Amino acid sequence: MKTQPLRMEFASQGRRVPLPGLLAAGISALILAWVALQMVDAMAERARQQQTLKRIADESQAPPVQAKALEKPDPKDVARALFARQTVRNLNTPWTDLLAGLEKAPNNVALLVLEPSAAKRSLSITAEAASPTQMLDYLAALQADGRFANVALVSHQLQAQAPGTPLRFQLRASWGEVP
Image (cartoon, one colour):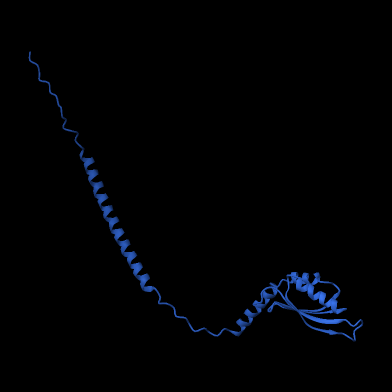
């Protein structure tokens, strides 16, 4: 009896990769290389464009602007600006506070004329009182009121021809900060 030799393979020769798989891997590698080259070219082109833009921006920087001689403004524009400024000043005058301060003072004095000047922030008051004491009390009341500053008696005169011979006087006061 003859036995046949037993063939044992301890190391296989490996699997053979089919030709279509090798061909697909090769084509994929070529495409990957081509895309990488395109990307490198695009990045280089972008860098060139950025350098060009920077150079153009640096060259186009205008030299420092020299101050032009001021042109004479149009008189109509000046008049409009002055009118607008005066209107704003009049609107910002604290009329309510000023009138409340005048009403708070003793009421035995007759106010004849109120002449406000918003530009000077001052108020000229012409009034009549029955006696010098009433006039001075009114003056002291306005001086004590915090809404008014620099309250001063400008003039006074006895009205001999008027009934009761009242004392007419003029005060000047200011409010806020003088511009």
